[in-house]
Length: 456
Ligand SMILES: O=c1ccn([C@@H]2O[C@H](COP(=O)(O)OP(=O)(O)O[C@H]3O[C@H](CO)[C@@H](O)[C@H](O)[C@H]3O)[C@@H](O)[C@H]2O)c(=O)[nH]1
Image 1 (tube, protein in one colour):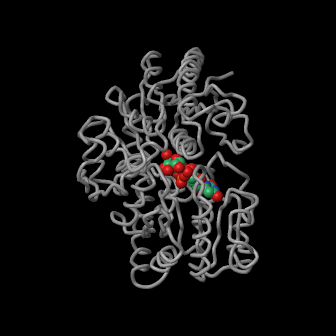
Image 2 (cartoon, helix red, strand yellow):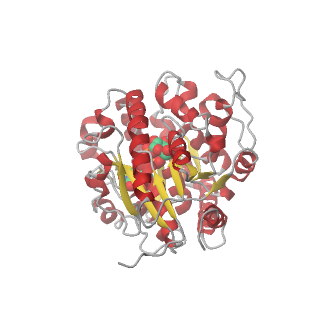
Image 3 (cartoon, helix red, strand yellow):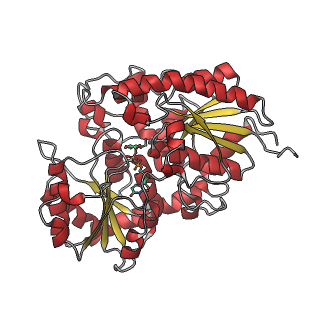
């Protein structure tokens, strides 16, 4: 059989979670569209799950072990146990995979690995390939973790607000959630700081963001690291439409169904509040109830992703019945399709980085209800740096109350303030599209990245 010609071969290794696999998978699709062979190595457990049924034809799939091939993360005793088993099993099986591919027609030129797995850099170096760490969170968030990792910012922070080049002044509540509650997820907190321990040895630091969005933060980090912004990595159909057939992500946590799209088709433009808290975090029951009452008081239509087939059990009594004419609950949907629908007026979001990039790319305003990790910092940027939304303030017990939620929805959806946010959102959407289009900042950065190993 004739050997297929490629300009080079990249092996992408995501952390095994939806919000991490999709950005790297999307990056692979872009590399494939530029003539490279792109292979995505996902965990055996995820590869065997139904959610990956929709994998794109242009990206090659391989598997590595996370140590829990039959059950994934859910099988581990603790987060710390998972991370350490993943490092042990992942390092071994990744090395094995690179050796296997070395004997094929297309040996690996560069391993692009999720920044949550810095041990992959050691594998790349041992196997003699280039190594690129890939951040699935904002440059701004990375600026903060980097400073803590390097001892430039000491914890607990003695005198907020903190001044970091390129970022607005940050109070403790604007820093990543681990700073205010370090004991909550100590293993994840350690992991996000560890992203930097060997980063100086990486040949590239790729970030799913775009230069115009975080210019000053990128400039400040580029003095320290070979950083290139290459995003947003959302399907090309919603941006530049240059990647053939790139209409959806390849991985979906749950079956999205079609209910959301047909329901939205019956609603007037800008009238619907869309609510989703991503693929990992869950709202405490009391918070769910406050959100429900806030939504009802806003008198808006709403589409609420609950990730549960029985939302009634967490909602106020009879709430589903009482909102039958105004609300729709789904356990999952095609979020991009929803955000692109003109019926959607705003997005009540936990501010996961993928959701925020999607909202910015599609010009949708945000009511920010951050829960943990990077979400608190993203919420600060949504409000103060990008002017596309407002953050719902929590009371002293950490609860975001119904009146505050209602007031925030109203600020974002109606009036002069809301109109300004809409105009800002449109501007970011245009800039996101420009960044990935031919000659845009992210497109040029991708070309710079591949130029280090491209054969022609
Ligand atoms: O009904 C839904 C709801 C969500 N999504 C998609 O799910 C993804 C959610 O990603 P994100 O907003 O980043 O949230 P998480 O999945 O919770 O992401 C985790 O990983 C991110 C990247 O590290 C972090 O920024 C988040 O804080 C962390 O919770 C997005 O692509 C959405 O389009 C759907 O397709 N359908």
